[in-house]
Length: 413
Image (cartoon, rainbow, N blue to C red):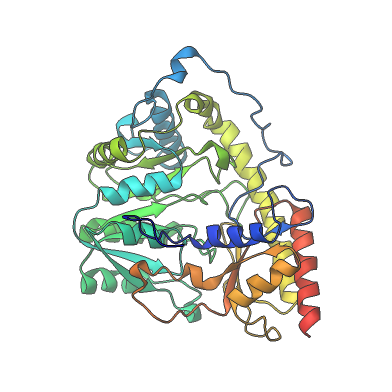
């Protein structure tokens, strides 16, 4: 079929591609025979020890109208209060509603941000979240500069090395997923404090994608991580935080996110939102208030920590038993970044492992999709022998997925 006049071909992001291919093979959401280890979605039902799930939303006539592009003020203030209470106790500088902008999910928030960036060099890590590729390719006002994370260093970078990248490449902004999707690495504590100070001292904006910040597997369940802990002045420090209900509260279908930063940033991204998306879903914003009650959020985070750590341990143990190597030990998020190089042929390449896995009704994501490569400027990917497996789904689905992978490996052994 010829291209439609005036319309370009828009590539599917890695996860959307694998879900589309699985759909062609008979996958539908909720199908009992399939194990969806591809899509990055947490199980959204009841968890032991977690608060009850929201089952209904009460609407008023006013909520059928347009909401403010920057979001409903009481919820914006609730987000500010949440961060002040959890990460900024005793600090003179505090967030207010003017430091918060709501949007219709993480991608919408990041798109608003990208539309607001001035011409400059932007640093981004590889590997990282697949959707960053199109995000960084479609806004031509800035130049994306890759920062390779070395597998020999556990896909981590020192503060000193990051400072060298900023100075040597003239970076004015760095995009960071923390915890990292797909490697599960976490920057926290003194190291995170150093990164925030690095941004401050180098006049370089750091954008922290913190959508997995409640999924931590060291220390006590319920811990979370945020750059907000180390911001000295909420109006002066060039620190931007993006989060939402999608992962940390396990309500991905609500499509509600927030961006936290200086007031002048909020004004800019709200202006971008006025022509990009028009604002977040109005009716659910009032309902979201109760989810951000500190005690409720604490119980949810504790339940997540216990439950997802058990699922992580299950996946790590069984995948290693089957011959998959851990490219990095996941400390956060809910993914296994797996090295396939010691599996039998033809399963040593992520794309082949994915395609053969569909025969066993198991969905994975090839590692090449995390080689964030805006404009396809690099011809070679370092991640062809890697894949990402999600332990977001329920344990029953993980067990099904492991069984399918075991059958797949036995077929070629």
